[in-house]
Figure 1 (cartoon, rainbow, N blue to C red):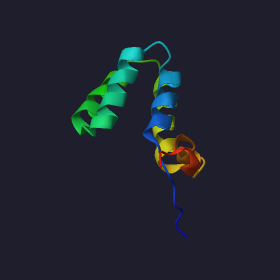
Figure 2 (figure 1 turned 135 degrees about the vertical axis):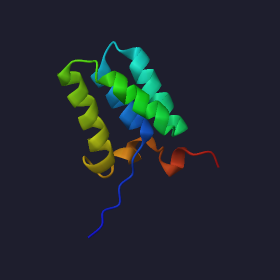
Figure 3 (figure 1 turned 90 degrees about the vertical axis):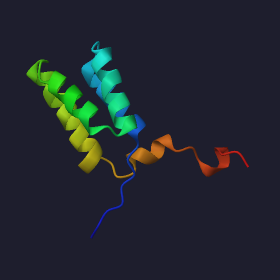
Length: 88
């Protein structure tokens, strides 16, 4: 049976910023690439990721794959305000 998942880009960006730590420039470039849906920018940022220690690369790869395919199916819903909080 197919599963409906809600993915929130904000969740991915938060996790990438955590995993990248003080590498703010790379986190900013990844965020910008994802927001712009620019495959070339994503590829360049991922190429730059290859220069980082293996543990950081693995954490970022796992974060992206988990965001796309795994984890809590309702996790993205946490970023969506409850209907009662939306302007009328």
